[in-house]
Image (cartoon, rainbow, N blue to C red; front, side):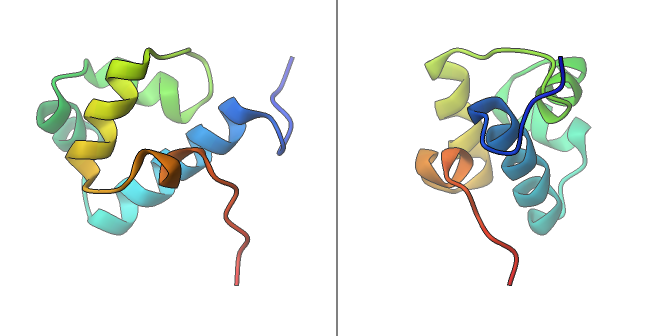
Length: 77
């Protein structure tokens, strides 16, 4: 079943990809910065994996954003 735009996994995966790209990181660079497997970064961005709160914190720290930035709906301007 595909995630809906209001689903937290969809919101997280969309934000993760958007922020990573805004920061200019490849998936490999992000995985090295937060000590998460490169394949898991890809699965997160595709909404195919659930993560722990610790991983969420590691991602936010590596991207230098608040955790809420990864979990909040952002409307295109």
